[in-house]
Length: 241
Image: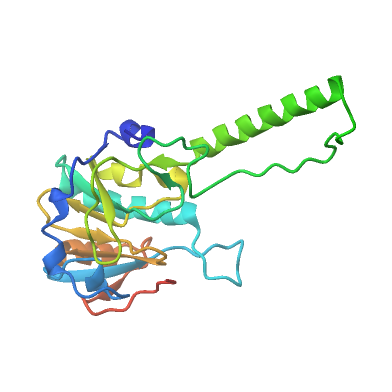
């Protein structure tokens, strides 16, 4: 189990069965609300993520700000959710993920590179060369250990086969939805066991979608900190994909 999930009180699902109800209720693959959120809810809203202020000419989101805004949305969803289990899906394709059982320091998807300023030449023998090799080995080991701390292991289970975007599922308390936020990973989908609401965050999106009953979505729209706007299943989202 990924340590971050365990600390949040969550665990990877053994199979994708908890999310299979979603698939026949989706629209086609694309940038619309119904590509990520089932078209069974009476109301929808879109919540924008904060822009990255360090890159004003880009349209990137601020990962920390996005996580905070999602946490604020989850806070609003907490009262109607109660203590029921919450299901979360994460896209299988993020580069920080590595296959179950692999070494996170060397697994495909990410790597380390060392730049050496004063590497001994071939004619340099003896103590200096041995010391340099030892230093390089230690630096490589340290870099791989740091890399391993920035990655998450994929589960051994099969993912939920969303159209063109398979997603691994985990289950836990509501705020376990942001269990991997320290790795700049936000969930793709979140819903409670009773399916009373549904949150969708398409990959490479600048927005999060919620579907649910009118009263709940109305509360989202009324929250000044969320800056939400009304939406429908056919609403086109701001996605850089």
